[in-house]
Length: 86
Image (cartoon, rainbow, N blue to C red; front, side, top):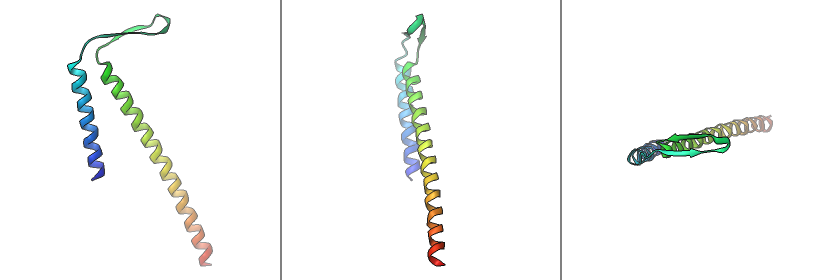
């Protein structure tokens, strides 16, 4: 149920960002160092997408780290149980 809620929340926020950037489709000129310039029409959507991707990568990394710690803790528990049962 929790995964469904989070999935719907992500879809709703993504839909909001998409429709917001569609309604505000002005061309924006970005100037950077060394004379680099480019024009972007959907800067808000691009920024939102980068943030969403960064958050997802962080979440996956956290989940991987926690699973590894859980696996190590379970291994220690099994080793302690073997020691106490002998």
